Length: 158
Image (cartoon, rainbow, N blue to C red):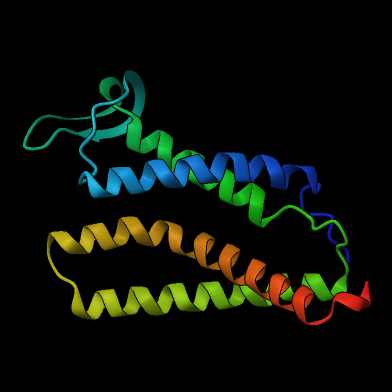
């Protein structure tokens, strides 16, 4: 199976250097209730709505971009980690990658279905925020776990 759509292996290390600090910052923001005022900036917004205030479209707004930067860095780092080739990328690893991605999508949507059925009100919005990242997290964890487990059980096959 050709893996032309994967990034070169060197991007995996860069991805980890982005993903780990973004994960730590995300956890800090999560425990602070996503209420931070670390980085204020004027940004272009396609649509914005101040809480009980005026809505605007295609305008410059002044806002805290900490959550935005943290989420964007998490996604960029996760994509680099998840979709960079392994050092020895072969058909077996491509199959593991595909099955891990399928597994991650299924588990993520199962969790989303449970949230739709049992979580209501404001907590539902928080679940939706977390759900934006679950496919990437589950994929990276499962794929790397299976690679680790297979490397541990068959070290002499190299």
